[in-house]
Length: 175
Image (cartoon, rainbow, N blue to C red):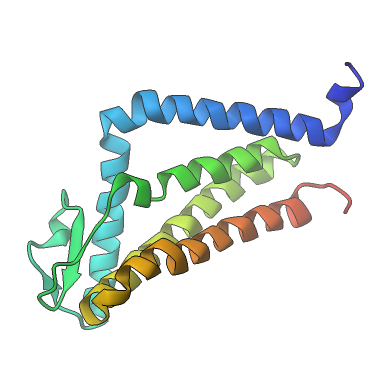
């Protein structure tokens, strides 16, 4: 058994599973029921997406999403898109962080790479929401497909790219 604990793959899997279970427990038992973290992230998404859409010349529809506390954002009189807790990116923040923490690498680098990665994932999610708002306004029949497949694949691809970058450039492992 001691030999197994020296295997880097086993150690990574053990840490990753442990961190994932810890994240699930903390999120399901504390963060999600409390609701503050989800609402904070959604407020940031709606505010930034709304601000950028206005800068691009779109007129926001409905209540002003820039005031906060809203989950819906639309343009040009459309109903807009509603951002639910599963779509706010918080779970991706946890998965990304868990991978980097479980994978070998210098802690000093992890201390800047994790926040940078979370910021990039968040910004990708903002762009995703903006694109879905535009799709909902001009091509509503394709909203479900783009929400379910296109933009989900793009955001997850970014997460995998960040993981790959960590493993190849920052982990210190010879590959």
